[in-house]
Structure formats: C-alpha cells, structure tokens
Length: 286
Ligand code: UTP
Image 1 (cartoon, rainbow, N blue to C red):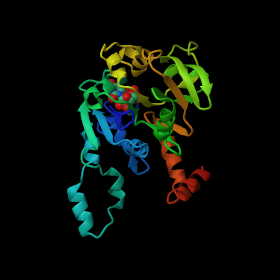
Image 2: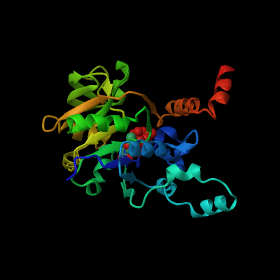
Image 3: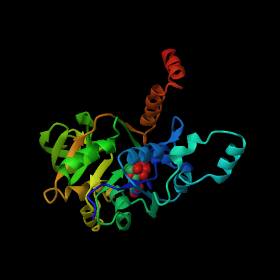
Image 4: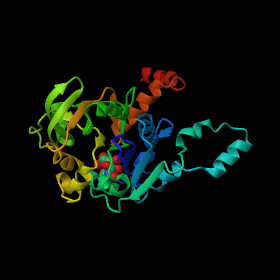
C-alpha cells in the first residue's frame, strides 16, 4: 500500500442541467474555457500534483471525454502533411494506462459516482476533482492539498469562504483548531438549511481521501436531495481518521452555472497575452 496520492477520481457523470440546452448534446466537461475543455484544466491540475492515474467516472453521452484524450490519427496525419505544428494537441495526449474509465449507469449522486471507482482506487489514498469547479492557483489547488497532506496525512479537503447567505448551496465544514491555512474538521454537512450552517467554509470540489471512505459509501445511504452524498460519507470518518480542511489560495469559478462559466472565460482570457488586449478593449467599451 502506498501513502502517496497517485490516483485521482474525476466524477463526470452528472447531467449538467444548469447549462441546458448546451448539455443536451455536449458534455459539460467538454465546454471550452477559451480554447480548452474544462476537463483539460482538471487533468492539468492533477498532473501538476503528481497524479499518475486519472479515473473518469462517466455516464451516457460522456464518451467524448475519453475520445478527447485519445490519439486523433486522422487529424494528426492531416496536420503533419500540411506542415502544421501538433504542439496544441500535447496536453490532450495521455500515456498508455494513464486514463481509466468506469461507468456510473445512473446519476445517483457524487458519493455514488466516487464509489463506482472503488475497485480501481483499491487500498490507497486518492484525490477527487470535480472538473466543473475551475480552481486557479499557483501552484494549483490539488498541488496545495498534496503539500498539506504530506504534513498531516489522513484526509485533506479544500475549503473556501463564501458569504454566510450562500452556505445552503454547498457542503460546509464545522471547523476546529486552526493552524495557518489548515483547519481541523469536527463535522460536515451537505446543503445546510439557511441559518444553520456551522461555518461559512464550503467544500469547492477538491479532496484527498483515504480508501476507508469507500466502505462508508457501501451503505448507499441517501442524503440531501435524495442523492448519495460524498459529504455524508466523509463526515462519518471524522473522529476515526485525521480530517483537515486547507484554505485554498487562489480563485474558484463554478463553471456548472452560466454566470460562473462566462466569468471563468474572462478570467482565463485576461491572463493570456495573446487574447487579453482584445478582450480588455471590448470590456472598456461597454
Ligand atoms: P453537480 O450537481 O454540480 O453536477 O455535481 P450536475 O449534476 O452535472 O449538474 P446540474 O446540477 O444538473 O447542473 C458535481 C459533480 O459531480 C458529478 C458531476 O458530473 C459534477 O462533476 N456527479 C454528480 C456525478 O458524476 N454523478 C452524479 O450522480 C452526480
């Protein structure tokens, strides 16, 4: 058994109903932020953090994600014979065996999606990344979590402050002792009723977890919204294993919502030297 975090689970089987009608025919994770699909940003973040195996939990209509990371023989051959550079394709290449997929036949909740990967994860710590949450930081969010994990071990999840009137939308932690960016977690609750949240620290979708969380998910217990919730399974491990939140240093964009998606496009465009001047000029004229 390895204590190093080598595997990452990407739950990508959700329906993406907040971005309909686009997501009727295009997987949410394939929508582009500037010129890269969302899933590329999450995979890049995982690679930067030293992840060696990407496990996609897919569902119906999500095959394009797997194709995207495959070799595009015709495209590459045509580009080569036209003398065009293949550099732009580099991030979408995977090493043999780097990408593994498993199917969640019904979207029964995030906890259920993670549980579908239990045999592939096996008996070692693993990361979970929700690709529709675009986390921009230097180093990336998962690399920050891995660094914290190497100090405290156990389970380490990213946390972010949100305005108190927003906590009912998220998984929220009950914080204990704090040391810099690390906070012990005493409890967690998924989508607390307004006014009942134990803090304004929400879970933005980056986790390092011990394999025992899979045993908690075996019970298939449903929680908020009638879904099998990852937050509930994690909460049951508190007290049995070390559990810390790490206040991520950087920006988060919820690309599963239309406003978050547009803002993420602007944020990335404004960081790109080749695009920023035109975008700035447009915005200045509004
Ligand atoms: P969301 O609730 O944000 O995603 O789930 P969704 O269901 O795709 O979107 P909406 O709310 O209908 O617009 C968070 C993450 O968990 C995955 C989603 O793909 C997303 O990455 N998920 C959720 C699953 O893989 N399976 C599920 O059963 C539920």
